[in-house]
Length: 344
Image (cartoon, rainbow, N blue to C red):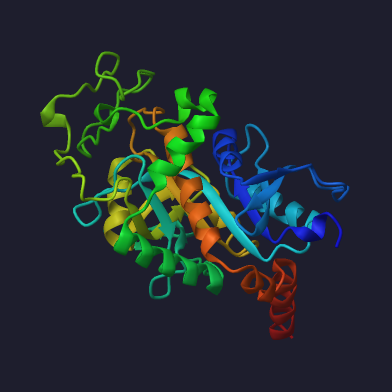
């Protein structure tokens, strides 16, 4: 088996913060690939998590969005043709509501519901005045073996709780330099502003700290929330729809509309470029609230929680179950053939 053929799990990150977190949770780091496709511009990290060999790629610096994610996934499959399961792991903006008490550092896992595959491409839809949001594009579900593992891990966490914070803190024992930017920030920096409170334009102040923030911490501007107790999971894992588009969601009113109408729990910018080209599970740590307020304090920790969850998930999957999956490249070529046949 050649170097490339050893790797059956493809893990994609959007930014370097997410890559740092992913690398931190490798049980073993391997040397770089011996060969990549001539047209492959990706940077790869290779390693092992549990009993699986994993290849991790990150989007090019300064590139974001759906098309860039599609390119990275396509190149990965050219150079690592034996990949059978995909993960998109990183940070996203939360969509808290009365139904879903989403807080910074929590995790959202894409989960299918009814006809929804778990990822909604919301700029595939159209908003008609005075009518509900309408979707015109449908995205594939994650592979069945990943969905089964999510349910198994969900039951495990419900019964025994999770140890994600312990796992993250264990990383800091050996990687002390990560503490500054990747540890859990103070709970005081987790501020959820009322939807009607908009951050002043051209004000670069960070809303995480009351001394520097224009928006401050006046109780009348904030949503009041009880502190989580020791009996509650913290961070909490939420399962549902992740909304994906090429633009960053920074509007609380649109956030709330999509949360109410489509049960969206999280917003991000890459997953829609993968679901039909790189069938995968999307795992997002919540680093802000998809509104106009500036808060970068939680990005490192949110990336760590997402990576810690991804590791727990992979450790539930038996290697022969992965080997039994079709190669993603074969799945996609089969889909292309079906579409071609149906058009004639």
